[in-house]
Amino acid sequence: MPIIKSVHRADLPVPDRVALEHSKMLCNRIRETIQLNNGMISFARFMEMALYEPGLGYYSGGARKFGGAGDFVTAPEISFLFTQCLAGQCQQVLRELQQPSILELGPGSGLMACDLLQVLEQKNCLPEKYFMLELGADLRQRQQQLVEKKIPHLASRVFWLDHLPEQPFTGIILGNEVLDAMPVHRLIMKNGGFSELCVGFTGDEFRWVHRAPDEQINTQINILPGDITKDLSDGYVTEINLQIKPWLNSLTGVIARGVMLFVDYGYTRLEYYHPQRTDGTLLCHYRHHVHDDPFLYPGLQDITASVDFTFVAEAATDAGFKVRGYTTQAHFLIGNGLEELINRSHLTGVIDRAELGRQARILTMPGEMGERFKVMALAKDFNVPLAGFQSFDQRSRL
Ligand SMILES: C[S@@+](CC[C@H](N)C(=O)[O-])C[C@H]1O[C@@H](n2cnc3c(N)ncnc32)[C@H](O)[C@@H]1O
Image (cartoon, rainbow, N blue to C red; front, side, top):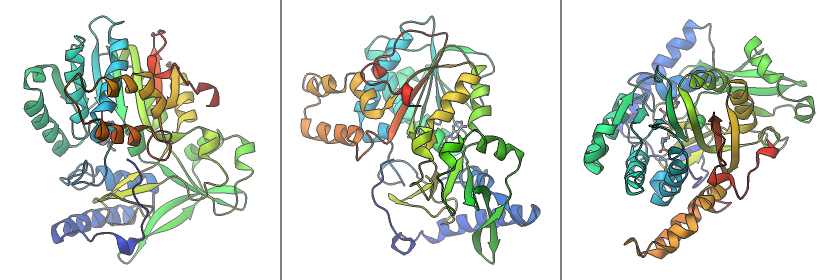
C-alpha cells in the first residue's frame, strides 16, 4: 500500500449512514470487551477486533477494501508486472519439486492468484493445487467469483481453506502484505523502560492507557539488544508482534519441502527501533488516505504495522526454516526479469509502454514501494539459490 497522502482527521471523507452504523456496532462490541476486562484491553486485542471481529471487523465485514474504490492498492492490484515477476520466482521453485502446490495466505481480492495461475499455465508450470487461506467469508466469496470469471478452466485446481492445511505439502507459501495485518502490541518508553499502551474508553471515545508489560511482552522486549533501547527517549512509541513466532511455528507443519515468500513493508531491527522513529510504525488506510489514528471509524479502515524482518528471520530459524533471501521489492522484481518483461511487452500484445513504465516505477522507486517493501524467502529442505535475491541479497543486514 503506497502512502498517498498523510492527513488530519478533519480532512478525511465522512462515511455514509450505513457504514457509520456498522462502525458503531463494532465500537459497542469493543467497549463491552474493555468493560469485561477491567477497563482496558491490549492494543493487539483492539486491532484484532477492529480487523477480524466476525461480521463486523474490517476484513470480516462487507466493505470494499482493495483497489481504486476501496481503501488501498496492493502491488498485484497496481500492476500485472508484479505477479509476472513473482510467477518467474515460483516457476524456478516449482520446477525443482515433485507434484508441488501453492498456498496463498490472505489472498485479498484474489487477483494475484488468478494472474499467477494464468502465467504459470503459459509457462507450463502449473501447481497441482492452489490453496487460498481466507479468514473472511465475504472476501472468500469475492475470490470465488473472480476465479470463475477470470480462470474458469483452472478453477478445479483452486481450494479455499479457513485454517492451515493439516497435511504437509510440497511447494510454495505466499503472503503479500499479510504480516502487516497481524495484530501488534504497542509500547511506550517511560523513565527508561517500556510500558504497554492499552486501549480504554471515556464516553464514546477510545483512549490510550498505560500498564506494566506482562511476562510475554517482557520476554520479547528482552530480545531487543540494550544498545538499541538505551537511545530511546521518553515518550518513544513502538510495536511488537507476538503472533509471528507461534504462527511461523505452525507453518513448519504445513510445508514438507519448499519455499515461503513474504512481501511486506518492514525493516531490519536496527531500522525498526531507530531512535528517530518516535511514533512507531502504525498506519491506517481509509479511502486512500494514510494516517495514524487507529481509533477512527473502527471496522471501516485498515490498520497495519511494519514488519521487524530480523525478528521474522530469527523466529523462522527457530521454527526450522532457513532464511534463503532478504531484499527490497525492487531488487526482487528486477532479479525476476522486470526489465525484460517491459521490453518484451510489445511482443505479447501489451503495447502501452508508458503505462507499464509508470506501474514499474511505483513498484520499484525508492520513494514508492521499491525500498519500503521487502521480500523474504524462508525455505525448508530447498537449497537452490533463488533468482529474486541474486543481485542484492541483504541477509547480512538482518
Ligand atoms: C492487506 S491485505 C492483503 C491482501 C492481498 N494479499 C493483497 O496483496 O492484495 C491482508 C490480508 O491478510 C489476511 N490475514 C491476516 N492475518 C492472516 C493470517 N494469520 N492468515 C491468513 N491471512 C491473514 C487478512 O485477512 C487480509 O485479507
